[in-house]
Amino acid sequence: MSELASDTAMVLAAGLGKRMRPLTASQPKPLVRVAGKPLIDHALDRVAEAGIAKAVVNVHYLADALEAHVTARAAPMVAVSDEREQLLETGGGMVRALPLLPDPFFCINSDNIWLDGPKDVFHDLSDAWDAARMDALLALVPHRGAHNFRGKGDFKLDATGHVTRRRSGRIAPFIYTGIQLVSHRLLRDAPEGPFSTNVLWDRAIEEGRLYGIAFTGQWFEVGTPAAIPATEAALREG
Image (cartoon, rainbow, N blue to C red):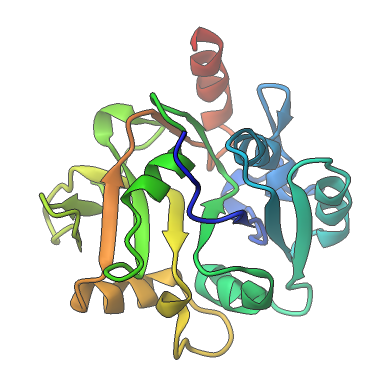
C-alpha cells in the first residue's frame, strides 16, 4: 500500500456533547458506547489499523475520564492536548495542539463512525495530497453513503478537486465526514482563543487551496441518542 502523508492524527474530542444528552450528563460524548465500544475507540481503531502511529486527543468536558481512557491504549500512542481551562472549538483546538502535530496531520471528529471503501480513508487522502497546492484536503461523502444525515449537504467538488460551499437554498452533493488532512499553512495567522475551522476553510476556498476527495465507504453521523440504534443495526449488517 502507498505511503501515508502523516504519522499523526488529531482526534477532536473536547466538545460538550449537548445533542447527545442525557447520555452525556455523566460521561463525555467520546465515551458513549456504540456497537459495544466508545465512539472515540471506533476512530482510534481505524487510525491504528491504517498504520498511523500517533494520535493527539483534545479534552475539556469531563476531561479526566476521557484522558484516562485514551492514554491507556496501546495503539496508537496517544498524547493529550489540554483544554480544561477553555473550550477552544475545532479551529482553536488545532492551534492549541500544533506543537504536538507534524506538518501535515490528519484530523478527525470523534463522533463519526465509518466503514472504509477499497482503501482506508487515510491512504485515500495521502494518495491525493499535494502540499504545494493544498492547505487542507477533506474527505467528502455523497448523500447515498451518509447515514443518519438529514441536512442539505456541505460542499460541491469540481473535476480538479476544488471544494466550494453549498449555496443558500440549494442542495450540495457532498457532506463533510469529519476527516481531513491539514497543512500547518491552513493554521497560519489564526485567530486567538475559540474559533471554528470554517474560518480557515473560507480563506482557503478564496485562495483556491481547499480540496476534497469523494469518500467511497459508508459514513454514520452519531450526534444524538436516536442515531445509535440505527448505526448499530447498519454495522451489524456490515
